[in-house]
Image (tube, rainbow, N blue to C red; front, side, top):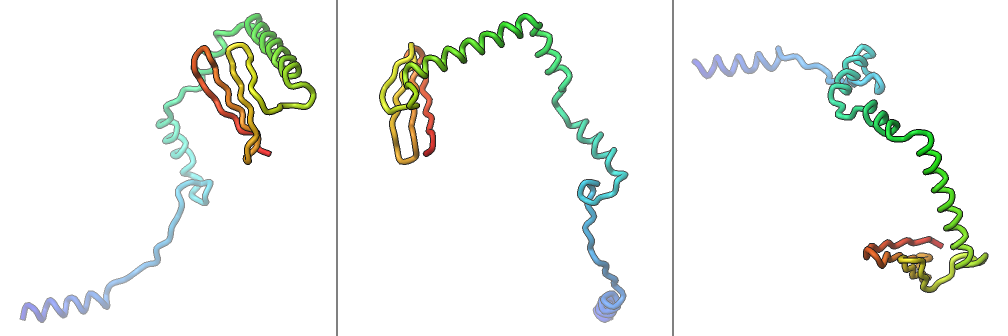
Length: 136
């Protein structure tokens, strides 16, 4: 008798059960979600943000005054002009040519490969080495 009641309840549940269509609704308003979620998403993102932009920029600007900024700019321009002059003296108007070159403590080895021009730079004072490939 118990099994008969359980079976009848199960069969009745099958006919009585309802289903619904599952629909995805995005949360973010940028992707079609409700526009009222914007403030909640913004406050949640700001709460998780670990960076403070104001302190970073303020410390950078406090360390430089206009005289220091001008002297750094002047130094960069002089070094740029000096490096351009050294480049023209060493390589001439034809551009970079394969070979070995020494600029102070920098040793440059320039070779041509299938990939293009390979430049190995070795700092003889520290032992640091860099490799640059200029494609064809």
